[in-house]
Image 1 (cartoon, one colour):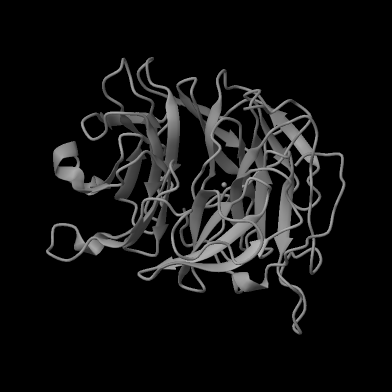
Image 2 (image 1 turned 90 degrees about the vertical axis):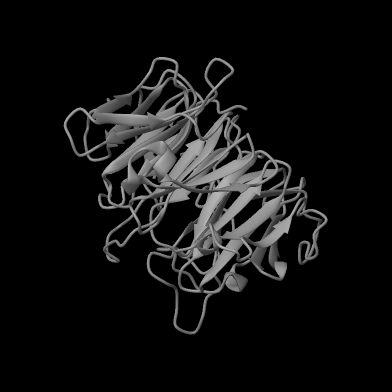
Length: 399
């Protein structure tokens, strides 16, 4: 487990016990995202507003990064992602000098991380989301506070030629998620939600599969308990062939939905866990657990119900919650594994408590027997993409 805190450090933890393994220092600004490599369980990357993306080796006893990726000194990275082939790194910047924002590309296979170039014409405000396709190394989606979601074919090279199409979210983009091969889910900062079929780009077919300007008033609120107050994001469940949309209430309830052409359909409301706003979530396919992190300084693990066949691989107990709390705020988690789950209807709504004193984030073909980590990202970026979650540590993590 990799954790990034608002004191700019990264921490590695044991995934099961949550015991801290080591603390890594290097960033000099807020960390905006963390990603594990797809084909290596020990390599992970972090991006920061300090203008760097850093590569770390989880196996190394050293506490310094293995490699640093930079571009122009004015670039502050508010998002990034790694291609499914682990060969291409793309960072999205904040708006520079009140004008443009940039997508910056590096070839990570070459020593020193060769800077390949930038795209500078596609967005006019902070780039909040960068998402490579889960199986196509040349397909990239980016979202921005300018309301635009751009889809690129990087095999075309030049920016004008690479831009396949643009979807208008009509609001600031907070989360993007690839749904299978051709669909894209977009969540906006004002709780809007849009589902696009990218096969319809440059055709006469309808691009938008489903759209609501405000999911809070859309048909299909939480299935029980409090009403939906906000959206966090979504993730694709491969084995079920459907998207899981996650939202919450101000009091800490977690609302789970599916989404298709008919709209949002409530699945379950998870109660008696958080006591404040939930900011992030993550699904771990190995333990079949949903992780949620909130402003109550807790990481909760919601486990599937026990079935006649017994617990799944690496599942602790049939119903469990692992909680970490101190004087910190939220953090975010992203699972590195492909999403394979039993029905989300089996998530228990009353997890048990674990009170450890230690503290406790895109997919490709991977070895199903590998022990994949779960990645956490903390701090200022409260709404994140598919696969996120949160926890607390010993150092202050404040918004």
